[in-house]
Length: 255
Length: 255
DNA sequence: AAAGCCTGTTCCCGCTATTCGAACGCAGCA
DNA sequence: TGCTGCGTTCGAATAGCGGGAACAGGCTTT
Image 1 (cartoon, helix red, strand yellow):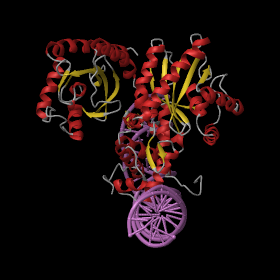
Image 2 (cartoon, chains in turn purple, red, cyan, green):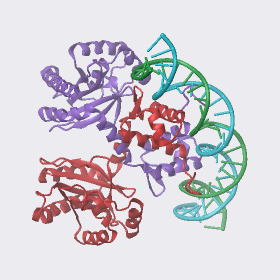
Image 3 (cartoon, chains in turn red, orange, yellow, purple):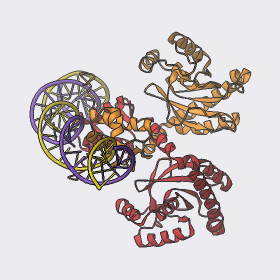
């Protein structure tokens, strides 16, 4: 059942990653359970799992398989090859030390935000954000900062692909409201997140832009809503972030 | 060309990961270059790359593909599912703060050591170690600490599979010498690395053992040879590490 | 300007490798 | 001692992977 007449994909590879995805969701599972889940014959699943295990991508303990940490090798490699990340990392540490809050660096890939590096401040909040996690861009400050500086067509494309699903009661789920807000973000240069991704958490995000104006990533500060409010939220943090973002952009241009 | 009569593997998946591996080594590459490298037809490589890209695993910029950070999601997930890691992390931070040196937590998977978490001390050295990197166990302190507490057969199996290749002039490349040293490690409970993985760098490693005695991972402190020598190396650091390792083991048993 | 050469892309055909289902061995349990 | 679950193995059928040739486009060379 090829979805498209042209651009046929390698289905065997797709099923392999269906299994990997299923394994990720279930933490660990056996052959039969996975066969049921993805709708394949037990023998097929068995063959896939043994190949992946032999390749080092899965670990088998008893009769259950789980993802191996070898994926880290690919992931960290991918992250560290992006010049932005190397440049941003020390600045993220700095901002965390200055604000005492949690600071994240986020990349855009395939229309989603990927949290690639986080630094702890003294009073860091722990949210659901985690290294490697992919989040729809409209749901958080860094994401909106990125979205605001993508081309109009890209934004439409991204929203069509990933939707505008809600995360909390405050998440923006209306495209028009979102477009209005992105316009504001574009004017002032940074974005806010007021309990839109986690209840009780506020954040500010500033984009890292390349020479052509498009955003390659964003830096954000997040903290409890009662600490990040008033002028701290609307003035101090944005200033600090814009400064850091600007420095990253400059260092990036000269690297 | 199946390598074995039984246990046939899914070759299409293998070629997909051959491509991923090739892409990792070259950082980024186009269809033709990869086709040459892995010895496949351009059309085949093209089909594989587009499927992987559609899945989000690769990113295409212009006519070059590179690994995407989505691999991080799998890798971090795999890491954080291991209970040891969660327990070890704060202790690793502690030791780094106390020693001011670089501290690593290492897991064993498929007979290789995987650096899964590292903490910076004030005077951290930067070695080639990196999150996700896989290293032969005989080449470093944490690895030898793990090796010493695996069963005799597992050790032989591991050495057969991954060899005893040298990394520096001091790396142990003789199995008998290694077995002797592992015996010593077993007696005193920790292992040294004197310029065996990086010239000018010394390290101490202590295993994290489960109830049955086998090692699930290890914690290590590394620093410049001229700072990590004498009693600091032979007494102070081992004491500190054994204490930390012991605490991790206790917390692990009660989690 | 045009010919050449390099990309990536598409097409289709042939053969192989993937898939399935059934049968097997084994463990735990009634 | 049967039952039922698991993972594993086998063989057969066909779907789909892989290859090669031809195409479109960009860039350099002549």
